[in-house]
Length: 388
Image (tube, rainbow, N blue to C red; front, top):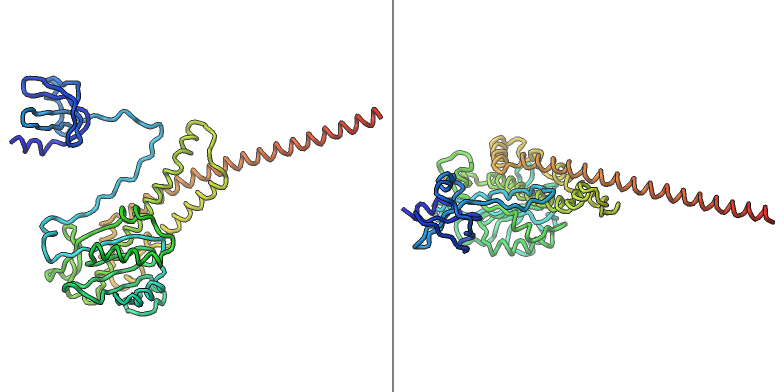
């Protein structure tokens, strides 16, 4: 009975301790818990809500307490972006042999797909081809923004495939972790403005997929991608890859915006306290340029606000694409990012206006001083003529 009780009680911060009718206290830590006084009397202890309780059983004593709250609160707090919960597969599905892994990364602002296609052919491990908007496969880009590559050497019945999107994301189907690492290293030569390794690893997305003969259309069920085994063209894989790649790309942009917000936090604090702004006009111009670059990538150079032309005459795939975008909350996350960008733009415009005013005032004082010097010289010349 006691282990069941302990499994339902979460560990937390500061605790009082009570063991049946006797009171016992000490300072110790275990499993991330810190136990200390004050001691809660029974009348108070009985009124503590269950979701605020914590316990640890040592074999002799039962230590029970209440979670506390930190008293350290900064003067100006900017809410951090909560880490989006990654979708995981159930244990039963993970242990099933008919399931494979699909992993997505966003590694750069853009890929040079033409040079990448040539590099893959020289490597001779994958058979690359461009996916056109009409669904055809071609060895020439022809304006295509997607490069698909199939492994020439298979290890099991399920093929290994990779989708490279020009906007800087890559989706790997049935690719092992070691092979993923090799592919990402190979990609570096064809990237423009590569992202840092920590951001790439943090914002990746991993899901499970399988095939089913009991469905007519591909879908997402219990956080598992179900593919139709009759889809020989692989358009369903393409659709899922498109949505997952878009999600990880948006995740990297969100992380970049968070870094930007952290970089201007000190300036906001100086404005609040009326201190001197520790930023030059050149730095403000760079900040404005960074904001416009982020806004350009979100609203102009990506499909975050629009549906790709590939789904123009493929209603089933378009519905699947929209369902996946809804699953990853792409529209909501994009709207939140634009709101944050608008706020940051107002801040840097305020800083730019303030620094311009200071510059104009400095120029006016310089002109006034020059006029005073000229007047002073005229007075000296006038005095010399009078005295001479």
